[in-house]
Length: 326
Image (cartoon, rainbow, N blue to C red):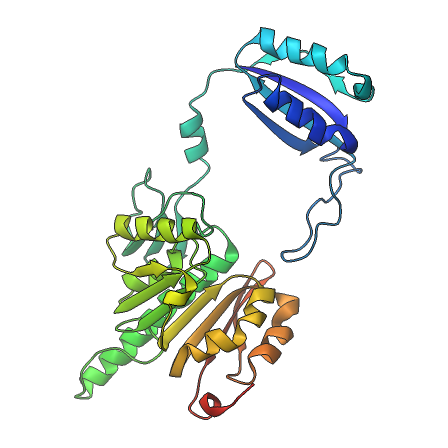
């Protein structure tokens, strides 16, 4: 395997990338900021939900992989000979050491600790010794591998509520009442995971005793990923498009982004039964008041957790709020 490294201004990046892949036989092309790590480094992406501040870096480094040195050298020669390539620079192709790329990729993903005894573990790792609840999940096409703060906060909330519910249920049993848990937890609950992605939240709820889980997403690939991940984890859930969500639920989980969460306020709120819980994530700290206002006709939201600039917001729908109209 040989690597060809080129330096190009923003105006040439797309044309050079297309030529490398479509005409010159490159196996892959990656693009990086040529000024990364220097005072001229340029932020390309803005905050989630906001447009990118720039279309591309001022100068980019393109790294193209070729099967052999002859192909890489020919590609460089042909590109530099073009009239429009005056500002293009190329280094001599260099050989890459053979590596176990699968093992190298897997080494980047370690088990993720969520709460006491609760872990997300890729299939190529053994669960930690203290693991009581394990979600087996490998990086894939759908959002939600457990590494993002919003996912971790949702799962941590599920685990914490399950512990609290069990403790209250045990106390009730001591007092002569059945120890079936307490409202607010997942045990015995009907749960909706709205915007399920990989299905990780619905699976987490099922592992913590949910009686029924509906997981819905607008992306058919996410639905398929959710069904596959549920099977791997030995849990049952129903996955489909958003219209599959019917009726009211004890717990509604939605880890999306602030703007769609505001638009979905009427829908998500009416899916929460009286006394049920709503858990929202994908929200930046500065967006808390916007979400409180959007959901005020149905319930009062509060910030229940925060991590790396993201927040988790929760609310409970009371009987009084259930009769309000927006």
